[in-house]
Length: 236
Image 1 (cartoon, rainbow, N blue to C red):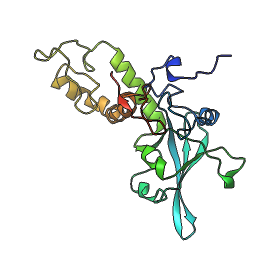
Image 2 (image 1 turned 90 degrees about the horizontal axis):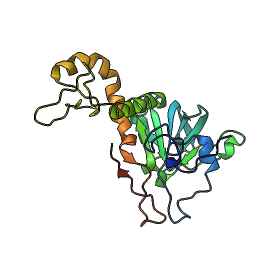
Image 3 (image 1 turned 180 degrees about the vertical axis):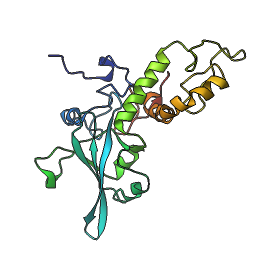
């Protein structure tokens, strides 16, 4: 039986890849690691985030108001509850979330809801966690596909995605890139135009997945004990 990886750099996957199960853990791993508490330890060793697809959006009655509750499925496709206990009760998110979008929770802390004893743990989002919430307009599955495509593109020789030519721009000595995703390369406008029908399906996901892939998840500054660490921009 393979030993359990402790750090993102123990994985064969890059630390900034959504395939890295330490940087982007399942709910099971988060539960196993829940003894790590940012408020009681001097520092953390790496950044991490839970990512899941929103399966359902529920607005529940709470006293004389309402509260947003999301049902989400992540890496292992187990549905969990994410309930918003911040001052706004998560209601402003209703203007731009949709079923099928991805929910990202940075530095996730599991919570067992009293009303759901015996059910899988979830996340209780309070005021201090709201800055760690991000909504991305793609499913977790689509983000994984974009992640794989991104790493495939940056690891290949810099050839044109249209004709596979390695012809460079005479001024920059590089192949021009798609101005939207900034990853896919072309030898010129003609190839880019001809390839657009194919590329447009992956262009936006490729752009959005770089919110993850262009960050350095393995580097944490040591001078801010008890505070959320700064996330640095990584290199391709």
